[in-house]
Image (cartoon, rainbow, N blue to C red; front, side, top):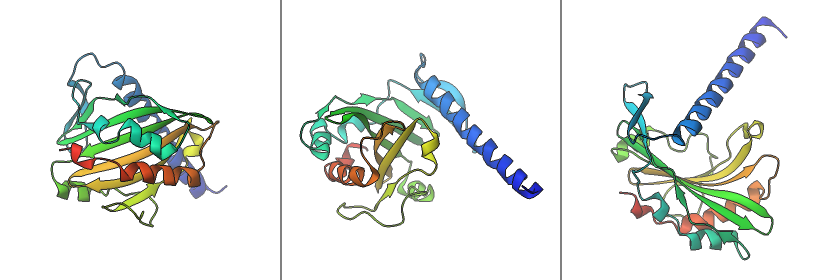
Length: 206
């Protein structure tokens, strides 16, 4: 391996480790918030970042339990959604609703992520479909694309997601499964996500 390849490999490894560390901090801090609005840091533009477990955007209202059931089909049990609380980054707000789906194949997780911006222009500038498949998903009122994150086979969990937007809000609907126990293939997951997204109430996020 030449010197140039060693440098490139080193940069990639540092980037991967950095993402992993950030993910670990967020995952652990979010579960230990005892002070709504606790200070977490600043982004590159100087906006403060904080998590408020008592602030909700209406994310659990976007997709009903019945909609998740109809997407997965007969024989599934879907538990009520759990709200993550709101992540505030400047004027941008994010929240996740998580549903446990018990199917004849085993248990998987279905997630609804919302990220709402100050304006529709800010949403557009954020490039909400970055990393997604180029082909547009048909059957939804707004632009939509599937996302299968690159390199996720190295992680403990894998997901297949559908991304769409409405107004000033970006939405991600995702099926999340343990890497060592994939119950729904990518091709099986896509129509499930589409069926659920068709029933989503995007107007719940103001």
